[in-house]
Length: 336
View 1 (tube, helix red, strand yellow):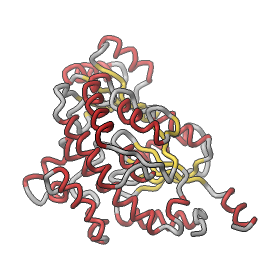
View 2 (spheres, one colour):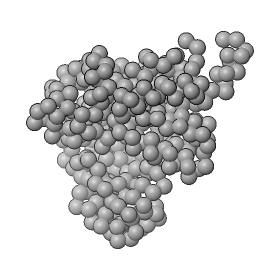
View 3 (cartoon, one colour):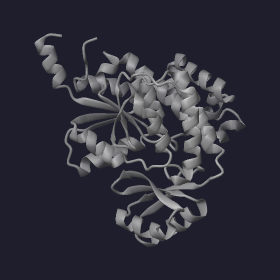
View 4 (cartoon, one colour):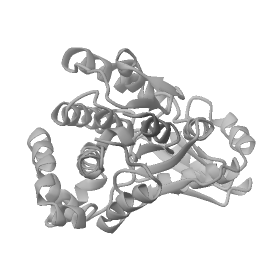
């Protein structure tokens, strides 16, 4: 690399890949991408073999099994499969692949897709881990509920939840006007009603039947820890991975702890995006179904008066093609 090339690289805008979590699934997600790139169906074949169900049948709604998509053990592996397939398409079609990406992070389940993208494990190993996690969570005796609280002051949320100690918890700090609560179903419903009475614009139940990111998942986290110790060997990553529970970069020696503690600790999405904005990350690419994370990043960036921030999504085939176009326009092209 000559001096001019190095200067261009140093001045290059930083890009981050962000991976969505459970709740982003929907019938026919990824269909236009897979119809245009049949070879990426191999990811779903591997996942189907591991879980014992045809994942594409569940996603495409081609039979009665489409009702399974919102069940934890199938939604998680479906999102992981699609996110990883899109990730690899993007990486293989960019001028210099991984050199274009500075940081990878995920929201809840999305951290597992992010770990694959970073290079901590291969696709099959990750699929086995996600499948096992989904089964543990889906079969947990501590079934519960999660709900997004929209338009409420954080202090008001804390005030209401004082009456629900050890029963309802803050699970996600998504943006300044969106907090997710998690806990026992009946208590979450009661707390939701009180929050609306105390000024929340909306309280929206999430498409999950669990109480994730709170102490009610302690037993599941311990079971997951044992599985990781017995079955998973992490590799050194090729791209930096950022933990959204710890709000810090994590290396190979940290990942087991990150994944185990993630189930019982809240997702600190606001703090994580604020950190990356301070590090001059200018482009955020949401890799997988939906566009929720892109919207959260936009609102956080606006609140922090961050300028020239680009948020890109990959929900549709046309969106994926747009990613390459925008990265070229922004000069995110390193030499191969």
